[in-house]
Image (cartoon, rainbow, N blue to C red; front, top):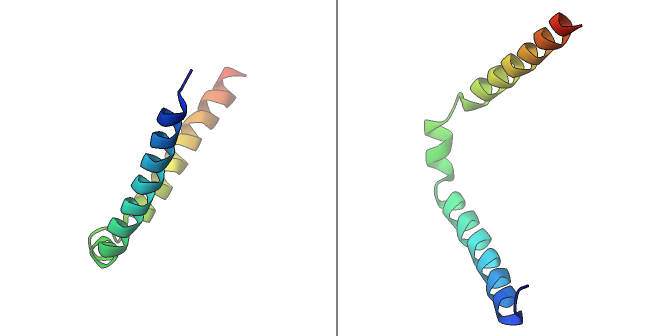
Length: 62
């Protein structure tokens, strides 16, 4: 399957990736708040739209 060295590398790579991602996000936090103000509403309406489509499909199928 995987050698010990490969598993160690994968673990270290994952930890480093997560740490770098968190640091990058912390640096860009103010910029994200400014540029992506209404994105929560877009995500909410998109999710509601998908749910409504599934409900329509379910009720029309039965």
